[in-house]
Length: 110
Image (cartoon, rainbow, N blue to C red):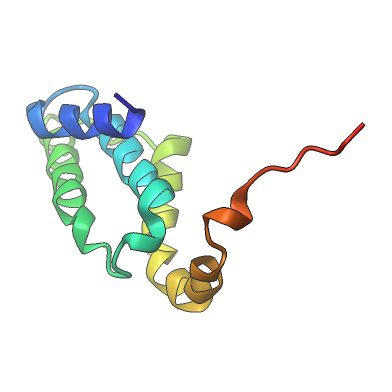
């Protein structure tokens, strides 16, 4: 299984008050965008369940008087989700044109 698959299974099966759910949801959202970005809709509707589950997990934290941590992972997820729609509109066509054949690493000959 890949990290994305593991995160998806955990997010689907873990209760919303699990102490690791927020971190796993952050990873799931970021990995999905990273791996499937060009195939996602610009409004990220494929991730709405995960985004909503993250909000529920934050509500659990607030209900027991714990502020959701402002980790690098959380801030990264917030930034990517916030700007994804405008970024996809701005550079989506360029990314789509750069197909898999353009992503191959070529090592210099010695």
